[in-house]
Image (tube, rainbow, N blue to C red; front, side):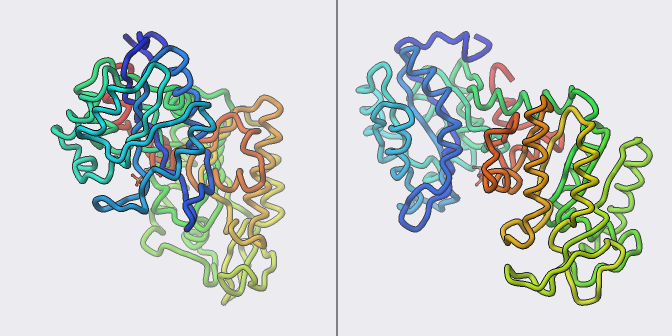
Length: 395
Ligand code: 3PG
């Protein structure tokens, strides 16, 4: 069996690793159900084909059994989206779970308790992986968001269950973040933002091998400005990355990639939602002020340059979009991508913060693809392989 579509599912017990690591508020209400919704197509397909579905996920980073990290609060939403009543287990291995699995009818769903309640999960302990595997006949990994972790439920279990195949979400994420990125319709542009260049070095270096245009935004630009000898006031700068910034600029030139830095910025007198702010040229950031967003001229020139592209990948916000005053750059880019998406341009949003920004402006459904992974999409964009994917038969 190569893929999920080829697997014989009727009456089979299927261990499905999903990433239901969703944010919950203090009253255990789900504040963003994107990951639950993203897990639905695979589960519905399994149910429609007569499988008995055993769902496994982590939530948060608990140390041992921690009630506040229970998956129980997810049951109502999951049941509603699937249209079946999901049965909740109090554990993820052991006799009680085995009984529940034995009683699970075709088309039934059992949700196992947080797999990280066992330290063996993150240690990728083979005995623990075997116990998980013993519950089922085959393995489907649809937890793209956790595929960069070599844990028992994401990697180890695949050794003991055959076939082990990717779910539809996993396949879609890989199609876009690997497929579309390595074989793009050109011109191909990347927009990389975020506060620190240190966390994006790998992504920038890898994308420089692939793109025609690279736009930089977010807090990281001040390290580039400073490396070019500009005054940056009290903007965020990583002093130990100045040489690196210079070498990235040189590399872009050598590769023939046109790298665009913002030409103007919105500066603030303090890091706060109610800070005083003004727009200045990138070359005239005043003493005592810090840049918190890209300026209107930059939005205009970025947008114009994006008009000629066919594929765009975006990772990281352009400014401190959590503060409305400094959200214009990020929101303008989100709107531009939505517009271009409507014209047939492939638009891929990879990674946590830029996804949140696109959701904030209500444009999530306009993009070609919005990744459900933070760390996982970053690692893919850096050109790394993911252990959770490598372990599968259809890797
Ligand atoms: C995520 O939220 O990025 C994934 O669920 C992985 O979680 P982790 O960083 O705790 O492994």
